[in-house]
Amino acid sequence: MNPRINALLAGLPESEYQTITAHMELVSLSKGQDLFLTGQIASHVYYPVGALISMMMDMPDGFSVETYMVGRSHLIGWAALEGPSRYRANVRHSGLAYRIPIPVFKSLLPRCPAHERAIADAMRRMIMQLAHGVVCGKHHSVEQQLIRWMLISLDRTLEPVIAMTHQEIAERLGFRREAITLALGRLTMMGYIDSRRGEIAVTSREGLEAMVCDCYWLGQEKPKPELREVGKAFLRGATADRGFQRTVSPVA
Image (cartoon, rainbow, N blue to C red; front, side, top):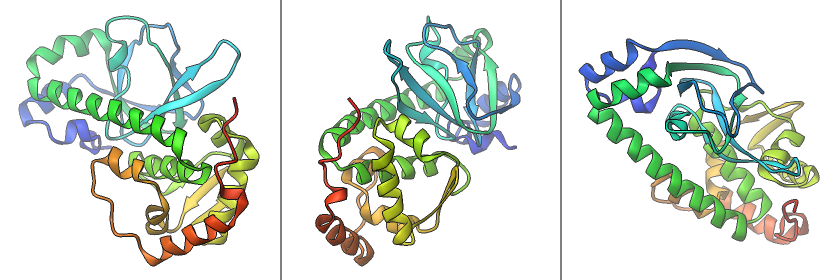
């Protein structure tokens, strides 16, 4: 597996690329695996090249929610370099990742200024996307938030499949399972996804992109494409469908 699949490594000058990759270890991550917990000091920095890792916030009452997902455009463990982590790093999608021990990583950074700048830029984008996620949760419907989450998932993995149950998605997003099932059922009927037991295959990314809210495009720093007829048809149907109104609220 080529390390340059990860965007942070893909654009490095050759000298920095060789410096970083000389200390990397390729590991296989399993769905449900915790790389480190809230309050722990991470032992490694991970560069996903197929795996998808969720940053989970665990509340004292047992409620957990995904605040961000890290895939091949980012790295995980950077925020815990100087002390205990403020989140739990949980593997959401099985796959491969390269890792470097934290002490080694910290010693390499002064020799890799381009890489340090790339990480800082990735962190800036992450903060921006987190802000858009807050806005999305306040102003957009369940299905729009779900579609945005699905598209971001696809952007961070290597295949058009989301290996999760309706219940798992509901828990990650903080909605009732019934609301997620209703939204996925609608998308299946429209032919944009194929929802099977424990797996969702996206069959029309174009259709999802036509339906997603502006928050997705703002977070990607891309101009919103012109709304296609397929998206207009969905929006007309969604307006008439009471099940897709904002009256379906997140779990408190």
